[in-house]
Image (cartoon, rainbow, N blue to C red; front, side, top):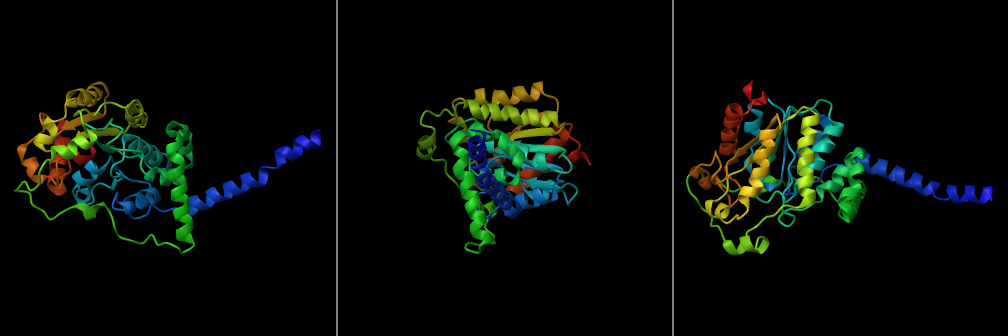
Length: 318
């Protein structure tokens, strides 16, 4: 009987060893692949150098809003833009957690773009970048059950990509990035149109709502920053006036951000949307469309100015 039990226990051992070796192989050979959904080299550099002062997280709204050159202020600050287009706040939480798990020195500031649809589970989603994060950081696996069946295909696809690239079947040397989405500068004219029919495809009742998991992960970001003594500056980037007027539950959503900033030391909220304390009509001329900025250099200068005046963070007071 003892021999029988021993053989049963011994049977899966080779398989377990094979799985461990595969995970080690994937981790060692992993690189963030080029895509117009993000700045892959920002991730590769951040996970290699591990010593950035400022980490920027969020979705396409933050990728379009901030300019790395302006944020670094002639290389005074070391900035990594770790946002991913169309990603939800769970992705931002996993990115932040993962980077803090591997970094050598903790950042002094986290910049997070938040908006009316931050807690909506249709406009954004758990994107493929999370597969890469789980291969980069073993500690992240404690979160696996939180996201159920959504994670497995993303980890599988990231793994396949690594295997194909190491065998030479695909190349990861393309230079495509989110920067390809910007158009020529035009800061003095409004050359886009808000289309209500496109808006109502995702928001038929003009309500974004609050998904429980997304709210939970938002609160986790706050706690992560607080526990690590890192300042968090949340901001809502400028949006088109008509786009903003059609957001029926905007006040209830933004009240969450304001309340967080009021109740947590080291957390700030800067609101550049319509009826926000920092809204200015000139921002409409800086937009690419109803809710993405095109003139990110101009907006980043405004953002830095307001960080200096309206927060106690020391990064931009050097």
